[in-house]
Amino acid sequence: MHCKQNLQGLLTICRKAGKLQLGLAPVTEHLQQGQVSGVMVCQDTASKSKKEARFQCRRQGVPCIELPFTKEEMGWVIGRACGVIAVCDDGFFRRFQELVTQTEE
Image (tube, rainbow, N blue to C red; front, top):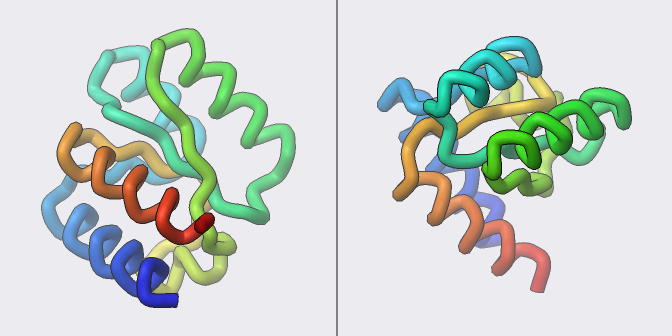
């Protein structure tokens, strides 16, 4: 539970810093421009969208992780329900990876 709260806090900070891209189309566009450090998908994101996000990440050599949140929970945290989120900062994305790993344990 504590790790999920840390993830929520980090998402809020990242959004306020302008380092998030929300939605599959903007994420794909920024991936192709080489501006993305990593991509995150929500648990209940449509399988087709997850598959496309992961495909685009593999093409660009960018990691893709699954967050322990639903799209609705994501809406509460960042103000917009979405299932595919790009992080455009290496430090922020590294921290997301650490927190997601801790949440899984």
